[in-house]
Length: 271
Ligand code: KIV
Image (tube, rainbow, N blue to C red):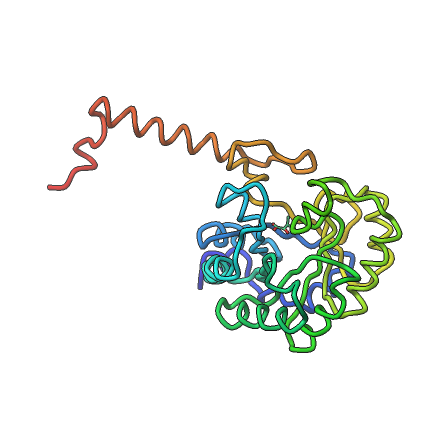
């Protein structure tokens, strides 16, 4: 039994558990993870689902947006995350241009992710315009989490990472992805009142990020909530630990001790 299973015994979270949570008024907790150690730690903490987000383009690869992330890279990271997750449901982002060409392309990409990584669901961006693709992927037996509001893969079309306020479009998008078979819906960067309206308008759970307290669940980027990258964090994110500065302090203590001859001491030397 893994450490996570000891701390959070019980069965692994499944896709149907998501709709059950909404029906029972139980909030869903999601966080991003990109590798084995972070997946293990978040799983041990008892989060419901891990998203292998294409935000890894920014927080792992140091890019300005997620557009350069490839399907191969998502598979590489998702495989490590799946190995670290005993209980949490693993969801993987379809990266830019791995599904936008056609529904067929979307099914093929989603299939590769499930076959090669052990993940249980995919996420893709778009509402009405992705209806046919979501339907085709779910028809293939692959659960789809949709993503509306601020969709980072369309950053250039949207003119930047901005709050999305088009009420009619956002409500239409939410209804469209539900009708197409999505099992849950990420709502990113929309006013809290509108996210509340979306949550009431659909039966599938909404997972908010920068979308206020009335979504059915929340997701944050792990590097933001841990203050791991020591950069500028979005105003909607909250810091729960200063892991980045703890790491800098640890590295500089190590450097100081090596330079002063304090490390390695007899205790850390072999006989
Ligand atoms: O890529 C990602 O991490 C995401 C979340 C911010 C929802 O899509």
